[in-house]
Amino acid sequence: MTVTVPVRPGQVIQLAGKDRRWDDRPLRMQVSRVREDLVSHHNGDRERWLEGFELDDHGHPVRRLQELVDLDVLARAPGQGCPVDE
Image (cartoon, rainbow, N blue to C red; front, side, top):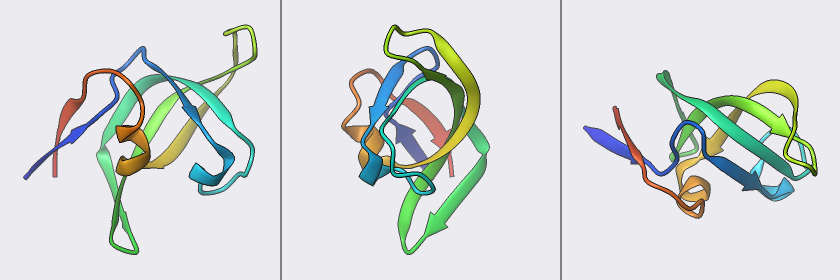
C-alpha cells in the first residue's frame, strides 16, 4: 500500500509542542528527507521519521535532527505530498 506523506524535501514545517513525541517545545524544521525505510505504527497511528534541520527564528539551521511525526500532523503542513510505500 502506498501512503502519501504530505511533506517534501526542502519544505519548512512548524510543529507545535503537543505534536512532538519526545519534546514539548515547538519546532521549526526544514525537511531533508522522509525516511521511507523507517515506518512506525504506535497505538494505531501512522507516523513517519523525518530528517532535517531545526531552524532558528531567522530561518538559519541550528542543528540536524530526526523527528517522528504523525501523518495527521503532517497533513496540516502546506505543500505537495510524496508517496511512500508501506
